[in-house]
Image (cartoon, rainbow, N blue to C red; front, side, top):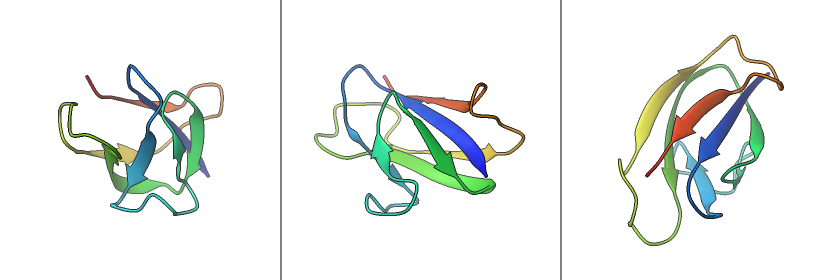
Length: 72
């Protein structure tokens, strides 16, 4: 199991691989559990963020040191 935190200026639902209802779904700015591998991240709600999506390899993380994904 791996860990990721998706940062954004407000709370949004994190879309992982296009799904907001998956096992790893959750809000921004909170550490989420996810399977190892490549995953595509985006945010629900208005498209007022950049980039619109990011594909990131998630590996070798811990709950204390999650992979960080940033949206502005």
